[in-house]
Length: 444
Image 1 (cartoon, rainbow, N blue to C red):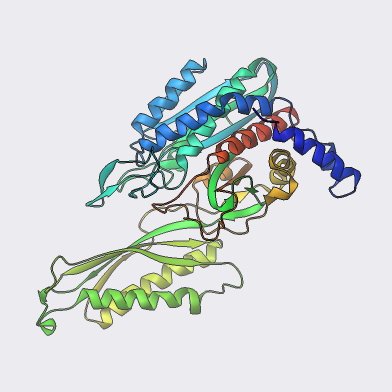
Image 2: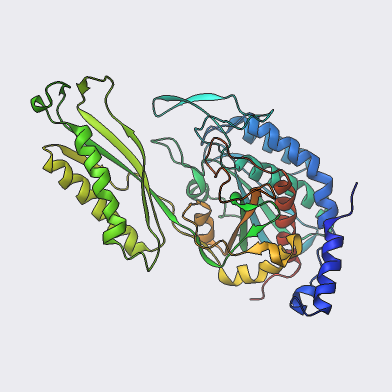
């Protein structure tokens, strides 16, 4: 056993306030008395859940085992979970013993088609077929942590039920990374199936472990936080011929390469990136099967990230035009679906809610460890919840202390590594935010 960091934090804050180092308002804000004990009580379970889920990852809309684990835990807590929402989603509502506001807390459950290379004793060995390719499956984005953290938060809040003011909805969501082709899923589908219809929260909260911060840090900002995300699909169609006789056909590989090169000017020459950042990324190229055959077609898929709606629409127009006209210049045809599915909007933190809850996050890790991460080009479908009600989404550092997060394997890397102390930070942060909000909700 060791001394609670909260005791040390309280002493440090009081001393700093006396010396005028931190604002007195923060110094006077006390950590919620139940947070440290509650987080400590569930910590071992949270770590065990995380390792189990990590070892048994499931792709979007296929989180059958994970959802069953979550639902069984909620039942053991005395809650009545609703299952099968948006295919595999799970929700449950905790009614406190006192009147108060309503809040929702969300975690995502899906993994990625990534072959793990961490060397962990509980590393995933799962494989699947994705887009016609055999690949590993890995929690390379940390959703295993999010799920286990919210399971721990649910247990902690149920233990406080009699003294808890208000109600809390726990949302365990599938397919944040996107549903399989031809299926609906994720946050938008959870909402479409009515999770906020009978339970309309006053605020919604969520978190994401992030490699760009060290363990013990929290990243948060009001207003835009994460980019809008859109997917595109471009099929460049030529005419197959022998590799020794390229003049006998139309080479879609050369045309596709030219499309990719020309598309780079969309950001560098056609967008005013002094206004907002823009990213156009090609993530996969598929075409051909043999070294001496020029194929009929090449498929290009990728992602677009934006913060401004006008810039977003302009990228759609420009990428479509580049694909079609460049392909035409090579005698090929481009079928450009830009975007090819409905994307995620910008994730925006409600400014008032953020300002109100930043002191709560500071109580967890200290004022100096709550940082503004700046605009993040990653995307999140938490954005759909935050368009319905005031939302707060924040990052929890996952890179071990002493390791430079700039060089650490990033989220979505096969070597993505989570310092498990981030689990404790996540539990304490969500508990602190939830309890502070329920105890003292915004007026009006």
